[in-house]
Image (cartoon, rainbow, N blue to C red; front, side, top):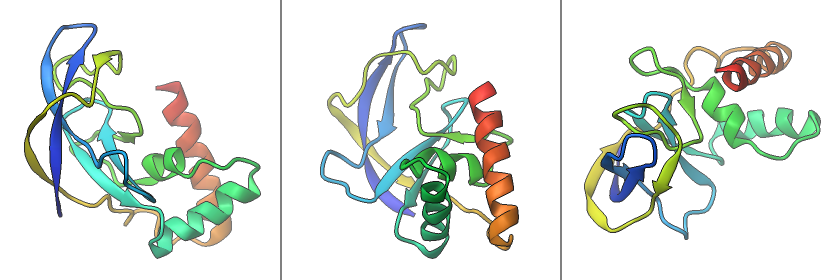
Length: 139
């Protein structure tokens, strides 16, 4: 768990103001993931052992962004898959009028877990990652 500043955002679809965790502009190798319903967050570090393994698979697939792969592979929370996009916790939209506004508090954000896929062989992990990313794009 990590204490992270909450910054104000406004949903362009429903108009709701809400706080979202933000690591700020100076975070390197870490990102905050958000569930598709906008109600749960988790951090993920690009330098842990599992992320390094995923990064190698992502690079061998001809792309450079590890974040969508890690979001797709992270264990869901409350039945919701993680995404790299910020979502409104009221309507679930990722269409925001603004984000990164004034600080409105602090939240204790857990680290994303990967228990469902961490023990897979590299070839099975690659297959699971491709399927998870494909399903995330369709959602």
